Amino acid sequence: MDMNLNEQLSGDVIIDDLDSEDALRAAAGRSGARQLPQMMRRIPVTLTLEVGSVRISLQELMDIGPSSVLPLDSLAGEPLVIKVNGTPIGRAEVVVAGEQYGLKVIDLEGLNLDILAP
Image (cartoon, rainbow, N blue to C red):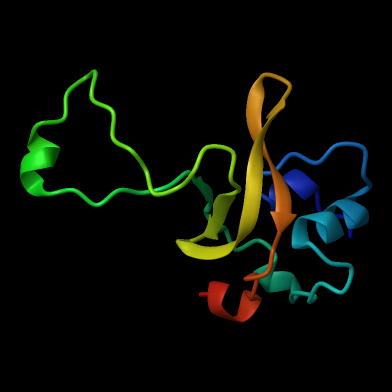
């Protein structure tokens, strides 16, 4: 695997002290991760970490101001949802990686490359 890990993961995931192949296995969450054809390895995806959500009325939305606080549907300290192109794939926690935020993967139970590939 000669391809740079940061190219494959679009710089969204920081994994220290691992060689490229081990880092890819760690990012996939299991050593038997499915191999992608060479042409698919460069397809960009958007990885997001969702803190939570709240359902509000349009009136409540109009009333939001700079000091507004809206309670979310998740509890403080519980794992956050990892999404790829809007599809939940696992859970993680936020970590500090140098001067940036990063994510520490807890599990990737929903990682299914068949539904993520365009």
